[in-house]
Amino acid sequence: MADASATNGCDAEPAGTQSSRAVLELRNLIVGGHIPPEERLTEVQLSERLGMSRTPIRAAIQQLRAEGLLEPLPGGGFHARAFGPAEIAEAIELRGMIEGFAARLLAERGIAPEDFARLGALVAEMDALFEAEDFGADQFVAYGGLNARFHAALASATGSALVVEEARRANARPFAAASALVRVRGGGAASRDHLLPAQDQHRAVLEAIRERQGARAEAIMREHARHSERNLMKALRAKAPLTGVAGAGLIRRPA
Image (tube, rainbow, N blue to C red; front, side):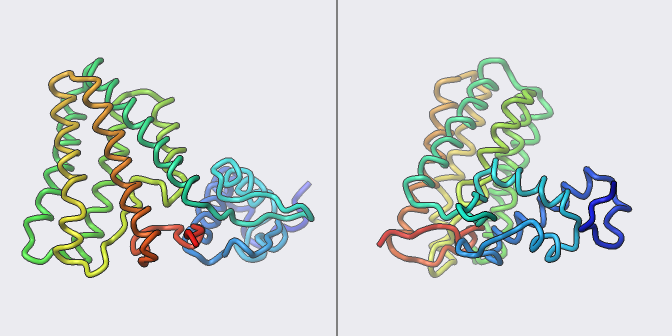
């Protein structure tokens, strides 16, 4: 029997496609700050807002609950979760543990030449951005995209579906993801200097993988995550604008 709340045209899409689109659109609304934590959400409301039937909306809510972006309200419905600094630090630390494990696997088991070349090419593209006379907003955004691809490629290179899935889950919270880079106030040289230590760690982990140094590779990636954590916490304490951090509106800043 068709969902009574179905909207015109939605049923033309396969159920899996509808659910995937619902997850993506709802996640984007939350991460983009269009759904603040205090707003009560219901299946009916979201169905109307997204122009979809309640079946894919229900699946999207379940997915985003699993990712930690939504939680149920006592009186019914859901709301976007807000996250405190301690929880964010734990999420980033967990990402570092998973990526450190991935780097250790690659060092100890070996890495396919094409995967190593792909990682090296991404690092080279990031290096080239630092050669610009003025490291501005365009370079910062480009670096963020390349950085996210590097982290995803590192997990993918293990060939382990489990590692890839756990890395994806660790990156699901936008402010804890590898792509969550805080742009330093003032931009320019300050932003460039802010990112240079992380770029050095990218080069160092590839060297450790190439030299089959598992413990070193793992330690570098865990410290790499801690570097991101320190930068974010510093920005929170300074009450600086979290430029470039998706989901910043979900973060409870320290008093």
